[in-house]
Length: 351
View 1 (cartoon, rainbow, N blue to C red):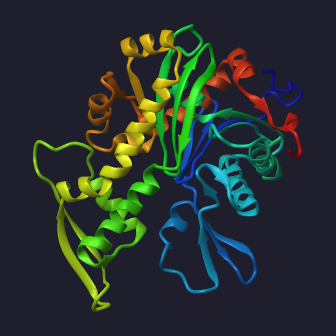
View 2 (tube, rainbow, N blue to C red):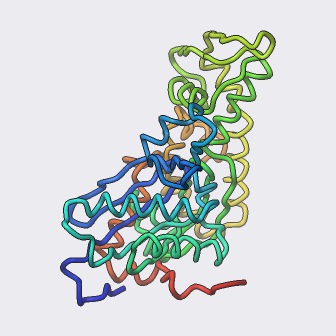
């Protein structure tokens, strides 16, 4: 891929991991400069953006009726085009705040989930263009994650990667810079939070907020039995009395809450292996499975998947940033970028 040369020296080159929960932005020459929640607060009286990122996230569940806090992406797909555009514009302006003007506009490499339609993929490109990007290339997330994890995807060997985000888990076998077999399932970080909320309701008659559930998951969540027991405080509203209530929960209880979703991820991983060519399965047996994304940080998930599949499983270094690091590597490797990226402007307008 060849970036336009007229403003080559001035144009910022950005790599964006546009995630359901968090957006990360890499700027060539500066590194990852933005890592903020994909959350936007809108004042519905005048349709103006009040806050984006961390500031908006702090408002969740605490706003009056005229302020709407929204996550414009669901499962990595744009659910609210207008709000996504405003969020990207905010991030672009933040990247350019060291300049007196933001011209020329940035060239962008942005990631999309595996199972998006052409229309959904084009919407990502359109949103980035409307927000101020001059050129937009889209790359499949597992490809970027594999590159960011340091896998040699250009060789004729099988590389299996499981990217566990907030909205979806993407399981892919990659060889020769392409996805051979894959599956995207809506069981990921957000679903694990919902598991904890449902467990608290069913077992303790407590209604939890999503942020509380996520904090408990991070504090004591696990996929296998831990060497040392762990406990955390669960605070919510008692469904019987309607009053605030606080109890102590342990890792075994939270593991029970998460068990069904973890088994589903394991079953889908096995299903992908069953349809993968045997030559590539032999490579995976030797090289193992690599976990990326925030969900990979769940304690013992690699051990649980290894027990279930009989294959070696490891968590990638800096797993949270593998996707955005992959976009950074692609910006520096124009030849590889040309092979794996799709120009947003070339996508069909309708199906």
